[in-house]
Length: 227
Image (cartoon, rainbow, N blue to C red):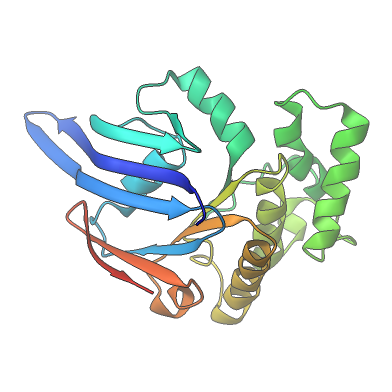
């Protein structure tokens, strides 16, 4: 039996918007086992983005408990969350979020700098990761010199820089055409087969079908789970 790597227990997130309280998550219960590949789906306003923030250690809940690899992260400070995030979670975003002034190699190496790794080690491993996503011939290119699909593959390589336990992909194909999107999903599938836990947020059912398990959010709660 594989152990739980992420567990959200009765998680609420309430935002105060002037005089109005917005309940983005309403008692969310969600568990992911080590090595799973899970898709999170739901309409706009369902709580998907807020759930990503909780799972990715980008925010803390109003109430409820979040455990990451057995450690309670629910009330951690931002600096402690950042440390855990840097070591345990690789983040992939719809907008790529690459730094335009840096080469592909430098973008991938950057997260390792925040973990105190030596420059030579950073660049060597970044090159290896770019070769893994079939961009070994693009290491010196800046983001503007790469296609959307290539930029997203750089982002995947960057997410693996600190060998995280979990890769969290938020709409990873949202800015790509369908053919390029499938290439990106295939890379995520490959990472999962190699043992990485993948959590992918998507609105696209054609993308979600690549995940062995899908959960559907509505009004801040899971309303359906399919395998």
